[in-house]
Length: 230
Image 1 (cartoon, rainbow, N blue to C red):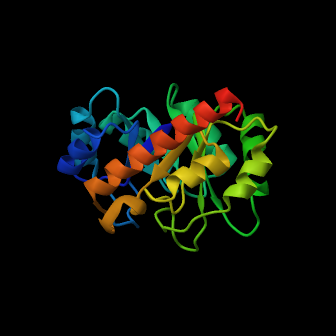
Image 2: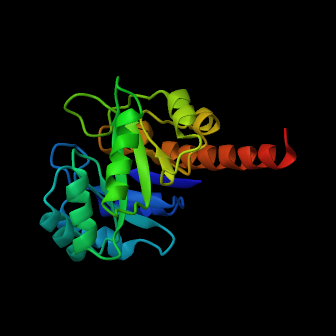
């Protein structure tokens, strides 16, 4: 189970979270969130991370040139596109940044999963190869971190038999519900920001630790159940 702790914006917290061994941390460059990080601090965080913790740059409606410049400055190799980027913009980013891993985000609203499937098809026709796709809750005017959960069953049902990229589940996940979410959706990974905070943008290390342990324990239990045919 790939586990990402998102919205880290200071070096001390980054080092403390990294010591808990998530697979990735998210560095958010969107100015409209309390979790925004400066490029200088992000670059310092990336330099200090252990090899096993992947830094992911989170972008919302940034220009392709800005994304490439920030990634070069901060030495980022993975980006998460969390805005309203078009398939053409995604394809252009891939064309201009060979080797950059792209996580495509879809914010699930009343129209369900169908727009995600359509978007992935359009990107595929343009030759885009995603590292993963992340499903979050849609809240008007908010790009992630809303704390709102999504319809896990709808995602699980729609993705059966599809050729989607590895699925990362987000949206209202917490230490006390991540196991149920994993059991329902069987995602490749999970992503959390507000669900492990004591205040907006302030990570609670006890919650971070509990989230990572719950996610990994749930994944291990699912693997055992599948192997035993239970």
